[in-house]
Length: 123
Image (cartoon, rainbow, N blue to C red; front, side, top):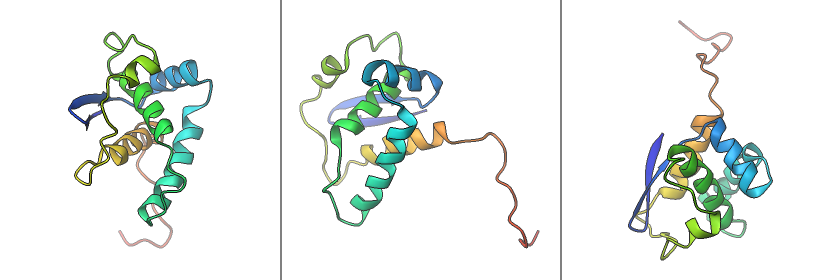
């Protein structure tokens, strides 16, 4: 679980099975597939190619994880939730987009087991 700042708002995020449910419920799609697609697009952004940037997709991911972090607080629709932001918060000092994608990856793709040791690795 982590908190990001979008504009002047603190947004708690939690990537867990409940976030998967909220994403499917709100958007009719699988959140894991969306995370994988966003992750590949973020690599292109890191190389300076912003042509595939999907801000609505990032806000959808943020919404589902925020609702999972605070289910009793986030009772509004995606459109109502999105309306609370005055701007996108895309200044150079803001890393919230990377943090959103990283929270999704950290929460959804962990195995709970230590990584297997590579063959031939020294102990």
